[in-house]
Length: 415
Image (cartoon, rainbow, N blue to C red; front, side):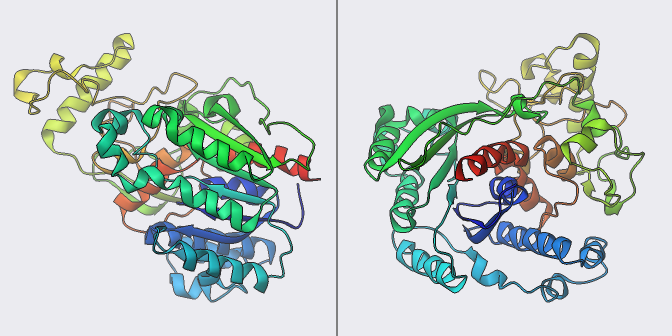
């Protein structure tokens, strides 16, 4: 674990990327995001870390149980959360003010050097789906396409020893590769060794297949190579993420519940649960009768023959969508008998059809906590905001276990 290493992050979301670095001893100086609920999640998580290090963990437990307010929780710590977490939209009009506020906080903390700059701009404009929907001209008019420019500006402004930029693999081919090539060229001219690699979370002890392009740059003054995390083989299955959670039918659950049993080896080894005994965010969405019937058919097909239900295979009375040529797998069961789930994405905030719980008796979509576990968030990670906002935060996040593996290697190079 490193000591006295400092990080900045823009497009921070709910903090999956920075969480991995904090676990390795990096100190967050400033985290920026436009989502107010995600920023509250970041503040709550920073409060968790402060209380844990300063013998105040019982206060955090009282908050999670709902016994004290968020304002009371934040008042217990010696951190200026509004300085560290900036809730603002990064744009052409705001970038100067944001960088000035970040610099002010760096100076306030008497930080001489920023060790790592992190950034995960919204991936929708770069995704394969988004690319298919946009012509070249329309893509050029989408402001999200050029958010990477603000990341470059921050690298230029703060001159970190390392930077980590995370996005979907298809960013490399968006606009015929013009964006990615321009980005890497500019960063290389700023005295950095720059290397992109596509990493799949399933190879790093995350029970989810999730491919992401991780672009890492480090100062040419630093000897080393790409901070590739150590791969970890195991014999765990997605069922190990679910089997200690209470069974729920659609609409059931509470924000604070008891577990159904002790943590298994995967939950302990991954740090997802271990000694934590307060279950939160385990509330099932309500579903209408039609969706429940479809869920049951999808689960039956998976259980009997490991087959995925096609929308066109449904009885006519259950088919309400006009589109019967694409997205035929819009109802998908989470494969609990495999070593990795399919990818959790932000769309889970909309309907949950693509993330059906594998238990026929439950016949529902995943809860926020179940989705967070698939992303490798620990159960003591509390997501702020209404349920839809929590799903979105989880779906957009970098798995903390993957981030920690990268952070460990960067820490070794810094030391």
